[in-house]
Image 1: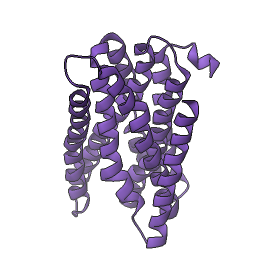
Image 2: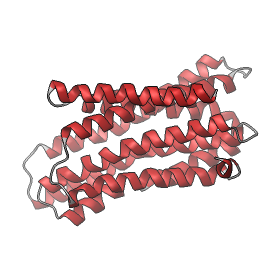
Image 3: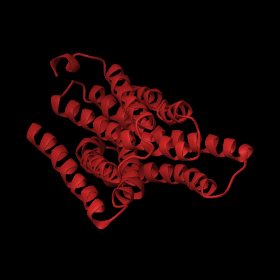
Length: 271
């Protein structure tokens, strides 16, 4: 902790978004071990990541955004609402690309269409990962915006990064395993799966630089990241965590509760 408090927030953003990318690659690597990933394991991991991201969205993003927006020209509630809504709407656009990919995957395809389908899958998942990288970068960039490296804010930023990294683990598997079922080689499935996370370090650094050099946008950026994260949780993580039999779906709910409680304990305990 002491070492990290002495480091540049942009460097920390790069380190943790790189870790998030590596978790995507690790998830994609399951094609070398299994043809299919256990539904029970997938549901528990997705639920756990959802709980962490819900808690981190408030304590690490929305609460600081409200605090920093107070005293400005616009009411704090309006600033945070605009940023939160923009983050969610950005993900709606990304989800539109994802929906097209899902529709293509459910249709019989010849070789040329399968190439097109694969390209769209990588493109859509890549778009999906952009706001996740921004969320981590914004969280670490806020450390510089605070004027001093605060231990509580650092733990909050780390929690955001860990929540996204945990989500990336099953997400990488969710990309590579369907491609394996379509008959692609394990190496190709892995390469495509891990490529989807490469944008996270890039946009993590950009997010950190943005809030450092343009401090007035910090409340908007924080709430934007929160809106994007909550949309991901509501649209993808929780529904996916509830899939399968009722007993398997409950693992997702329990994982969400455990993840939320862990994040809440970290933030409140450090407060």
